[in-house]
Amino acid sequence: MTEPFMPRTGTELETPETEEPEAQREGGRDLALASQSKLVWWGFKRHKVALVCGVITVLIYGIAIFAPFLAPYSQTAHNSEYPYAPPQQINLFHEGSFHPHVNGYTFEQDPDTLALTFSLDEEEIIPIGFFVRGEEYNLFGFIPWDRSLIGPVDINGPPMYLFGADANGRDILSRIIHGTTISMSIGLIGVLLSLFLGVIIGGISGYVGGRVDNLIQRAIELIMSIPTIPLWMALFAAVPSSWSPVQRYLALTVVISLVGWVGMAREVRGKFFAVRSDEYVTAAVADGASQSRVMFRHMLPSFTSHIIANLSLSIPTIILAETALSFIGLGLQPPTVSWGVLLQEAQNIRAVSTAPWILLPGIPVVITVLAMNFFGDGLRDAADPYKN
Image (cartoon, rainbow, N blue to C red; front, side, top):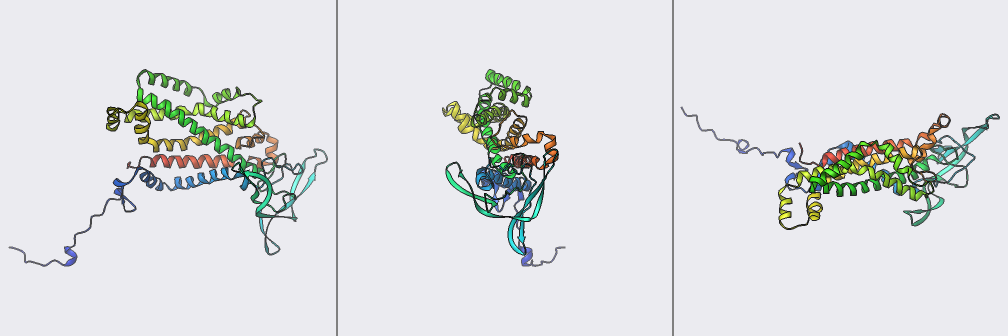
């Protein structure tokens, strides 16, 4: 028996709209039509920790660029009357009114050891301000200026030590900021030199193959078999001690790069092996393209994002290498200011027990290494935007 005809309502006549899978769209846009850079950016945005660490990394490099403006004092400014002066706290109000200031110091001298013991004097007020006039310097190396973001209103008056002072009465905060320029630039320049060597040597090894590949790989294995720190020490020990700080800075960068390229070369070699039999490479060869054009114009761009991600992970290694070499006295030397040079004073146990704030230059090393490692991990994951 047939069922009676029942008219369908308008709601029943509507067919449910098929929703596009989340994996096929990003913000309403089809992933299949997106460019490589957009795919990497969408993938990177999903890593919240990496995104935050990327912002921190940009801020650190901003400090390195604007160090003379951000530091209250120059890297050589000192006051021998305040050795190991303790950190001061910024107070925003005084007697009920807004009046940013720090308190001065009172000190007592031990008659036997002649050591000074500092304490804060709440009666002495040292006004501080923003964009105050200080020592002249060249911003970006060529723009003369004499303003600091924050500092004491009277540059010739009592000092302001927000992070304390070292044995020579130099502001540790200012020296940390100035040291950021050297430490971060060594990491960046060193990784660029490692990139150049790694891409050239690794590309030749992966594309040519055969005996050339065997020879290069055996050389890489020989370098990798030597402990890194002793190898750096041996190479840098050959640098004449009479060289200027700039020459030693360049030498340290080259020494670190001569060891750091092997990992990049292995990465590039593997990528060249993976893509050299692809159709677009075969088509380029059949079209008469030279080997160098096939390698660097067709093959290299296919995994550029992966190389960039590995570069971001290599910079912290170079920063740690500079810090370690400078700390043990084989890297940069005073008057050059870097985080490793600033930590040299921490080798004195008595100084650390008396003034523990001289360990503060180690904090930016930890923050930078962690931030750039998390940033590199997120970038490496985002470099493969089609993975599940």
